[in-house]
Image: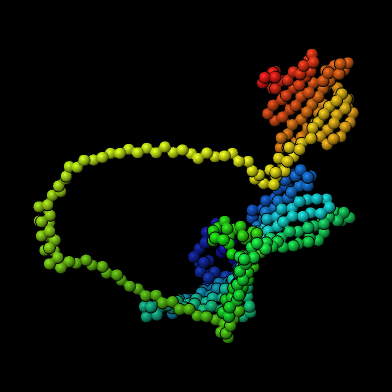
Length: 399
């Protein structure tokens, strides 16, 4: 990076001498950078025991290589600029299920490539009180890709190698929906120097949300290339500047001025006549009634359907004497002492725990406590009657 550019970034003071010497002697600049924006990663636990890994990232690679020089003479000023800016960015969204045997998931990619070679010579002429700007552009000799836009949704599978302890080769397969084939459009290149080619999917409407959605769910490929069609390797443009002076004046003839003076005299003879009429005032009040909304229960997602199904088919936990039957239909013998023992718990969305302790070993009397996030329920058998307490308060059969 040139010294003058570093000084600007560091906030140092620049003198006019340094600025003139940098322009007249020529300034070269070369740098490359790699950045990563909006990188987020999260793992979500699932009821199947396999975590769901969600990843979003936007890596960007950019480079710039060029130089600039100014030549000053008595007749003109020349500015010579040669630059090669490059930019490549890929936005990734990935969802992957982690499994000890094989990992599978979906991934959507959006990428952009920019390559804009600049070889320009600008001359500012000042002759005979006339200013003129000549711009000379040098075109690339070989075929050059200027812009590239790509989108690709795909599925992938990665097998786990137990010997190496790493995932092996990734098997990738693109996603295609036959229901969107009628939106598929192809761009055929023309015989001009600048050609646009590729294919894309046409959205239903050209809105930001529609374009964003179809770019994540469809495969598109559009590129802009430049290839010389004639022997000329340059193009010249000329711009001329001229000055103009706008003079505005407002004048009325003598006849018009006399007519205006006469109108002022005639207007003084006129007056406004107000006529008394009967006024009717009507008040109309409309009572607005809201529409009756039915409380419809529908599934919002696959997770809601799974949660409702699991709640409806939830297993029971039973305790008979010294035998405990868990939720997964496993029966085992476990002595229950005078301290509370956890006989069942559920860490799902409706989390709770069931605890039990022995009150008297001879009579085999026990006390049960159910602990949830909002309340604590205690059940005890006293004189062949169940006594229930919710948060320390007795609850009768009517309650």
